[in-house]
Length: 111
Image (cartoon, rainbow, N blue to C red):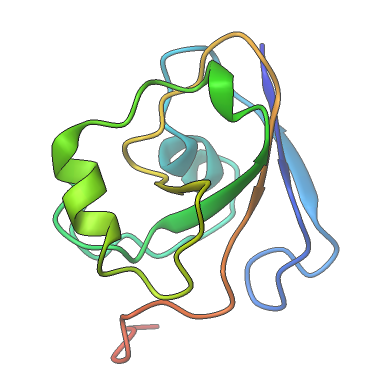
């Protein structure tokens, strides 16, 4: 099973974290199933950017980005060339390293 390494994030993973998930699982699903409560305001249907992550390693093993994800990412805070919506980035066979941006466009986050 591939491992997702999450770089330290003050709110979601202060010490960083590593989780494993079977190929075919989205990064968002894997994080949520392992207690990393990444935002996902649209319920993982590619209709927002709150689950935005930056793939720091292993991005080639993820599913290819589709047009809807590309269009939505244009609205993400802190967009980088290796940005993905974690709800659309499906794990392959390789490990990946992701960074959760410090902010999202969801200013009214519910607790």
